[in-house]
Amino acid sequence: MPDPAAYVTVPAPGRECGGCTLCCKVYDVPALEKPAGTWCRHCRPGQGCGIHETRPPQCRSFHCLWMTQDWLGPEWKPDRSKIVLSVDPATRFLFAQVDPGAPAAWKRDPYYGQLKEWARAGAPERRHVVVFLNKSATVVLPDRDVPVGVLGPGERILTRETRDAGGVSLTVEKVAA
Ligand code: SF4
Ligand code: SF4
Image (tube, rainbow, N blue to C red; front, side):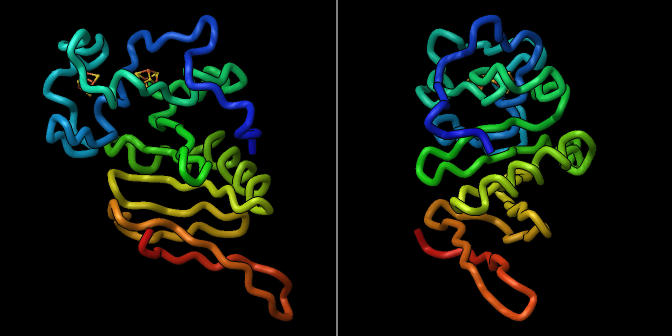
């Protein structure tokens, strides 16, 4: 799991969205009453934003992880991977928002293997990997994937360590924030 302290929020030199507009599909934009998983009515898919000068603050401030982190290879560009990566500022969890047009994209290689690696690396610090399909969340743990259903605005994911004869494992719950 990459060090959150090293994250930046501006595009890395040489990184450009180009023909990718996937963030304009996968996320909800409350200011536009746009639900997650449908194209924004202002998006020209593959070209860009039709209201670039007046787009909402949420859109202005967003750069996906592929844009800001040049150690993510070309395979992680969202229009190729069908996955938009971000870091949740509150929890520092790694969020992988999947294109509902390719809902199994995160299970393919090399993506699934890399998500599992990040899950292993982040587990000791409880910095987990969460895959979203629209608002439905699956926590990717080193040893298994745990679907937790729709994560509402007032909810968060909590993990706890449990110890038994088999060793230490993590349990996952959805709790009120
Ligand atoms: S998902 Fe990333 S690369 Fe694609 S349009 Fe959005 S910010 Fe640009
Ligand atoms: S307003 Fe523009 S940047 Fe924001 S989601 Fe719509 S098309 Fe994308």
